[in-house]
Image (cartoon, rainbow, N blue to C red):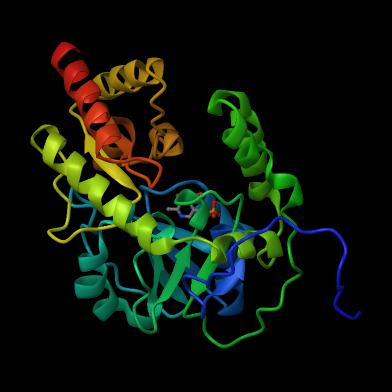
Length: 326
Ligand SMILES: Cc1ncc(COP(=O)(O)O)c(C=O)c1O
């Protein structure tokens, strides 16, 4: 078909460029993982206990066996498992804060057997030759999408997905209160969980290419720094790197699940929304103590590009006040 000329306009977006132009683009990170595992004939995938259900579900969906490993309070592996032929190890770059550990320890040790899950580390660039997953919608306002960097050679052709019906929550939040459109957001998440692996839609790709990643990353770095300074002394997790990092969130680890739940509820009453990473880890009887503690006591505080130092100061002030009275 020849290209159309004229007629009505599409949604107008800036012509930018891809953050990771060499990466393969999918409808989600879990689809990228499924395609990767299928393409290289993986037999078993070593996963942390501390991970969202989408990751083991993706492995099971393509008939790959899952083994679990434990992490410590640095969010690093307690022991490095020896991998058998046909096995890979996936490590989550937690909150985008574990770049050094990946580059200094895991990548040299496991090389082509390592899959770095940068779903929480959009701005962590892929290390040469290391298979790396991304889930950009955890960082920016797009409805879906995933990338796989350093894919091995193979047949990666997939039908293209369509995102037209996924925009209601994003547009709704532009015009109204987030509470009004949360159900629409959840509906898309459920649909993505059921969707077959597919290539990224054109609308998601165009949106992603239009973003100003430099300013997004700078704002996240600055906001992380502010919360680190204001809340560091109260935080039981000590993993902030020395260098400015464009992280997913500021992970605040508290002492007990009751305290974390109370603070989450009091923040919610002030319309400060704090997710839980990950409910399914709390519900899983085989979760080790450290992972259960992380899942039930960690508050991932927002530091994203919508906010500046004033917002961060308000957030830290509310958290400190509630901690002093809970
Ligand atoms: C660490 C991690 N990896 C992968 C995924 C899957 O990403 P996606 O939702 O893009 O499939 C998630 C969450 O959904 C996640 O938290």
